[in-house]
Length: 264
Image (cartoon, rainbow, N blue to C red):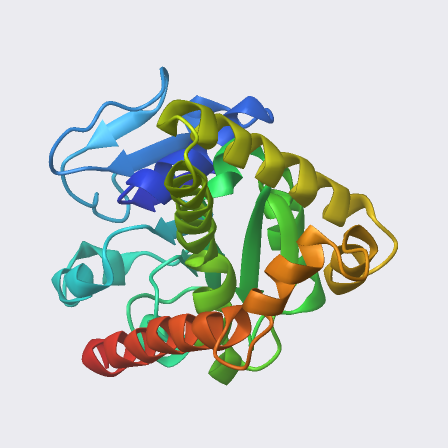
């Protein structure tokens, strides 16, 4: 599979490195990077999208630039390519908008999150016109990155992006807040940070491997009248953690829809 990546920033670069580690041949990858950003050995880096016919045909084109840069692709060399798959990781940009960029066999929206860098990420996918063979091909390609989930309704893709795409940043913020709360109680800051991260890592792994929900696990930790229950009583207030995260995800989803409107 010959791959052209138009942009390879934090997420795109993480995906590429993981694919290479899983056996993708770097000689089959070309990255468009106007800045000439360093790429893994063997990957071809070019400053602009090559014209169709200049070298072998690309089977897959992946768009990894910023959504605000989408306009730079219109009426350019991208439109002269005809890949099997056009895959976009641009937040908020809809399939109907992407379909006009080139004559691809199928258009796929993908939303990876940052832990794809270690093979523990989430990749949400939506492709209304892809057949079973194309879906299977994309699923196999994304598998080394982590959990792969197909989203049937594109209207829900902005919500999935808010939850899984933006989610790692919210988890990182929670970890930092947990450490800061420990420091506020009197623990040394560096020790509180280590304890918070180790606690989060262990709890997340336990939740992922458990046969019950995280809510059930929380209740198992909390003895009636104990210290954990007292803390949960704060988080479980009507204006507590669920309300805060609902507001957080709603803000992210709203911004995704604003970017979609701008991209149209």
